[in-house]
Amino acid sequence: MAKVTGALLMARSLKQQGVEYMFGVVGFPVQPIAAAAIEVGITYIGMRNEQSASYAAQAVGYMTGRPGACLVVSGPGVVHGLAGLANAKENCWPMILIGGASPTYQNGMGAFQEERQVQIASPFCKYAHAVEHVYRIPFYVEQAVRHSIYGRPGAVYLDMPDDIIQGEIEESEAVVVANIPEPPRSQAPQENIEAALDALEGAENPLVIVGKGMAWSRAEDEVRAFVERTQLPFLASPMGKGVIDDNHPLSVGAARSHALKEADVIFLMGARLNWIMHFGSKPRFKEGVKIIQLDISHEAIGNNQPTAVPLVGDGKAITGQLNQALENRQWFYPGDTAWRSALKEKADANAAQIQPMIDDNSSPTNYYRALKDIREAMTEDTIIIGEGANTMDIGRTQLPNASPRLRLDAGSYGTMGIGMGFAIAAAVVHRDKPVVSVSGDSALGFSGMEIETACRHKLPIKIVVLNNGGIGRGIDEFPKDEQLPAHVLTIAARYDLMMEAFGGKGFYVEDPADLKQALADAKAFDGPALVNVRLHAAAGRKPQQFGWLTT
Ligand code: ADP
Ligand code: MG
Image 1 (cartoon, helix red, strand yellow):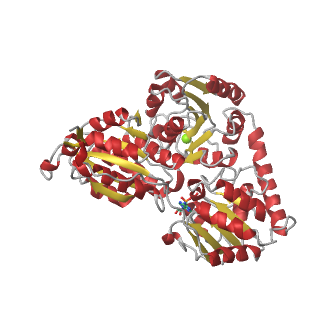
Image 2 (cartoon, rainbow, N blue to C red):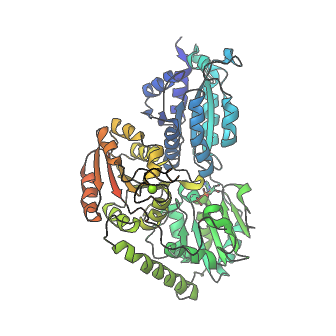
Image 3 (tube, protein in one colour):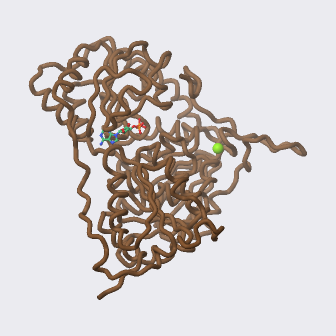
């Protein structure tokens, strides 16, 4: 009879359940799992820090619909990986963290890197378990992968002690499990479908908000059909961008604040009224605004604001139901309302307000001017990654997405440092698509060593650093003998040379007049490239009506 090790059984079980990508940092005791993963045909990317590996695994989960795996060593490896678990939990993205653990027979003895790993992973996970027998590995992998993608997606954790990884059983002793089918799609009761349409019909200032739950459920065809059939104005959440083309005539993204503030009926589709949406409360929202809420999670209904009409279930299935029900109605939202004109007026005013910054050719440059060239250098199928406070916020408004799941950013948890992991994941999953990460200088710093990973694996990601020499903003000159302010970083630091150091191509842009050419050269280079754009130290956003994080 053939023998099989725990490591090989783990790799085979992952492969069986459709886990195609693994990111990790090897060492004791997980090295054999990485080797086995490569042996069974899982794409393995060796990263430089577990944080980035765990970010990459969840980006794979969001982009492909099956969790990516993150493989980490015991103790500190698992602790670093927690960063990704927390981010995956907040974003509702699937990933599986596989933590090596000290041998079970040394539990409690102060073993090398001994840690209570299942306990510390649990608050971030839908499912966290230690594997206690080699023959049950397929059972645990099936449970973990299923929990990660069924219902509201999220993170899961499996603990693999050294003696389980190295343990051997007869192949025939392993538990046999079924392949996990795609998540079942549940519908909403018909009466709620009709109630939702009635509420929209009765609205004076209706608004649709499309979130990344709709991108996850692959509801783009249904959502576009719904918006076009009803002619309702819509806006997208940061990563809901592209479910419908940002340049769609019904998009009111350019009048976001006004749309949120004055809408009387809001149809929340796979999005949450959390801090990004100002909790749905006044003065950012109208008092008493009627909320129609589509979400896969029962517990999410009514969070922060009461829900007038709940639509609990799968985004694609329920939007399909709405479209079907619309076949029996004549109604659509008319083209000539005061609401539409007000939104248009506001969008035009906002555009006029930023135009001078876009047209400003002074050097060093500002965000809007830099993003103009970046936008022009991008094709519609580009996967755009954004991080860094201003870089991300302004980038969100200036870099349009035409298709779903092509924008990845700091997301619901506001995590800086996700960029390199996300870019690497995007390049591995979508070998046919350009990947551009637009990052602040501070944000890049969290995971900058992964530039080496991109170079080693020959992943042709393009990184653009909008470099203001600081967190939030920089300073023009370093003070002589004084304590440095907390937010400053090196002025005009040469991140482009980091890229060169590992074999990629770096460009340094001082004058915006040179940016177009640098971007073109970076694009033409067949490998990773970094364009380091010096920004004015005081560059900022256009003036906002409300301060950051106001409720
Ligand atoms: P955004 O940041 O785009 O607003 P959030 O992550 O805050 O998005 O919210 C996404 C919502 O989508 C979550 O509440 C989640 O439960 C929900 N969701 C996840 N999967 C589905 C699905 N298949 N159908 C409908 N809603 C979903
Ligand atoms: Mg900065």
